[in-house]
Length: 99
Image 1 (cartoon, rainbow, N blue to C red):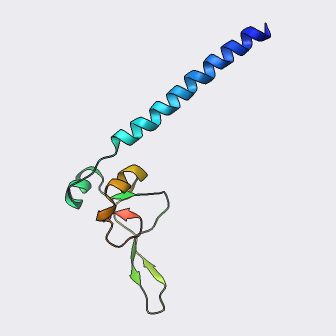
Image 2 (image 1 turned 90 degrees about the horizontal axis):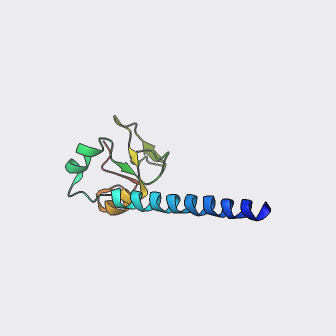
Image 3 (image 1 turned 120 degrees about the vertical axis):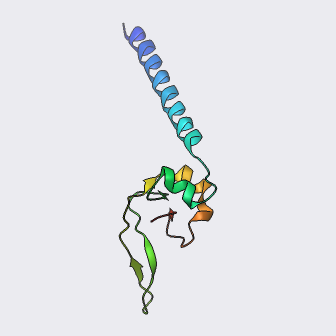
């Protein structure tokens, strides 16, 4: 009985690992490089962020403290898409093509 249980658990674990691996490859294939910010904003109105919780940095005050401004749209979070479009993040705040 224990041997049968081990075989079943091994099969379930193998299937779950395969599905997790295929999910990661799907995310990588869904990442898209855009020609410019206008094209990106047709798909992602608020731009693409490399991680959740980043704020739109608009500059620095006279003391060197960062100034943040709320954006009209929320950004889409995708590290893979951000990495493909890193050149479009002109202010280097981690959000490409924010508006």
